[in-house]
Length: 102
Image (cartoon, rainbow, N blue to C red; front, side):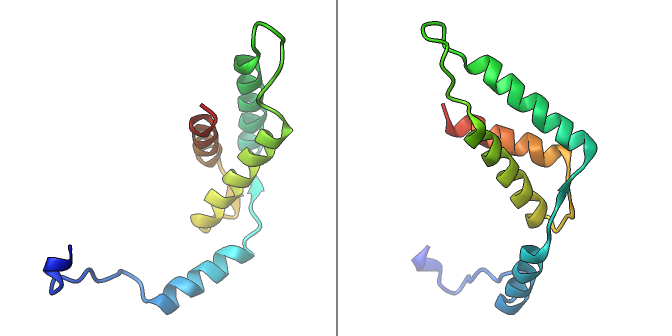
């Protein structure tokens, strides 16, 4: 990498443009679409049902994980500068959470 210093990667956006974009994204307050809200509820129920252990009927999936899915979904909407939280953001949030709790 250091041997090819003359081949500098040129960013698509200037630092100022990136900062402006991030400031704009922070101001967005996305709301769940009806279908995304339903998907969120269904996915949480599915995660809870798949999580129960046979020995003591305890859950690893709690309200904190539901909050995490909500926060991740909101962050994905903001990243895409979208004022709606869509099904695909919920899907990705659930995928990320599922991978992180293995």
